[in-house]
Length: 300
Ligand SMILES: *[C@@H]1O[C@H](CO)[C@@H](O)[C@H](O)[C@H]1NC(C)=O
Image (cartoon, rainbow, N blue to C red; front, side):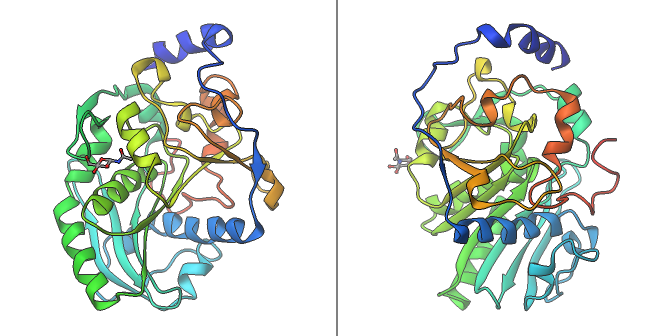
């Protein structure tokens, strides 16, 4: 992976930039911004060990100011999960205040190992014909798939007017994407919020997912993780991209989120240069510090 990054850094300027024609960027309504700022707090909550190991019926919580939207709501954990082998962790919770069933996945606790040790390989999925996903993401998802499908299936019978939200940051965003796809294949209407997700699959999978309604894939300035795995390995993103152009630690305004369409769009995060380790701080800031709860800290 490291050599690949080096290669990309060298050849970036001559890679095919006119791969797909983008629409011109447009900004989001203030209501969308509010939703993005709210649901990311569930991605933050999934980093807290107390939440991913919570007992059924427990209330979700975070360190001060890290997830007030979650903490002030009437929440109840339905299922929490941590798997030793694939390192998939998260929870399914009912949020009675916002009338939602939320499936939240934890991101990786070692981004450095993503960048240096990760060998992304596409593997077959059962989502649609020819649809392939990054093997690690796919196996992380199928480790918890049956449990989550069953849990959500029961919860939506109990709370039929609730929305189903799949959310995650970083690796968690990639798993949330596959979770949304599987749940939709089982007939559920799912809204996906992914923050700083890597590319999840090949063109067939991304096109199929893109055609489904309710995808909010957020990226932030030069975040290196959504630039991986490289296009040259056959990976593309789902569309649209909501690209946050505001710097870390600042209050984001609606015109600082550009909406970009296409499986490859060079006018958003993808066009901001090669994935650099030094750009990782942009990965850790999505309206707030998302991985504050992570242990060890993501740089280790
Ligand atoms: C996505 O794949 C599913 C399963 O094969 C199929 O039913 C659906 O029509 C596909 N959607 C699109 C837009 O291709």
